[in-house]
Image (tube, rainbow, N blue to C red):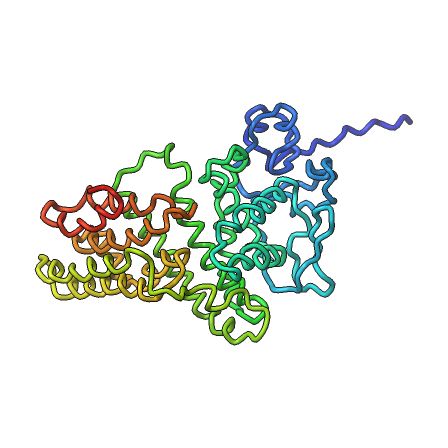
Length: 408
């Protein structure tokens, strides 16, 4: 009896890219760019974070990068395997293999696309933090080592590198980078919070550093692609309030990690001399402190209740206090957001006039850091937004911020 030929089973592409689905063609699901999009030289984007299907060969392998397991070939991969482990070792071909005895599984390989982003971090992004030898070394060396150990850390480094390409208007920025940025890093944030439930000497530096990286990410992301978005001036205020909320939520975790970092006798990333300056301050600090001090009569005579006046008094005092810490300029934008009360943020959301005035004075600190790629024009944007929604009788109270950014 003749043997009947069996029909070759059809394997459906369930997690293919958007273009392949639109064209009703099978997608090999290789990321960041599938084989079909490579062949036709068109942008490739995926609709979700679904993991790519197992593939015997990735595009990175075809260009000389070591073999990778399926779960490590997507640039937006956000594994929640975050238990600390000994640092991985790097081969000469781009493979990142965990050291013997590792008790969790960080990614074992970088795709060529990811490797280029990591290289961009080392060569370009890390230099933007060259404010002291210790800080530069931390962002150039320690951060990379930690990224090979913790997936949430790696993803944050890669997405910040892509944002740096975008905000510095690099000709190397592509639609792939845009799609990667837009995919976000909510899974990385969740993995960070999970890791933070068990802070030890092995992960305390990463937990503390991720607080700063997350703040930089939020400030940079809000400026990404602004020319393609229609936003009112007032939206800028709400955006910054949300960023401050994020900073404050991560600050509680950082405060838990900090004593453990301080107690470490060796292998600390940065020392106090890397963070603080020896001089009395920066040019313009005295003028800003005097301008903030001159706000108290405005606060006292505003049509607010005693409780609100007290909130505004504390908010203004926190601006002066943030300057008194004598931090290096890269760190100064983060101080006031972490000091200010949650109730004050409610006043900003409710557009309390004096809260907006105080907010404009904090924006002067942001403008002092405008040379930083992730800070850029935040200062002038906030001051302009405050001026657009502030009642006319309060406009004299923001004369100093307007003059400081050239809007007077």
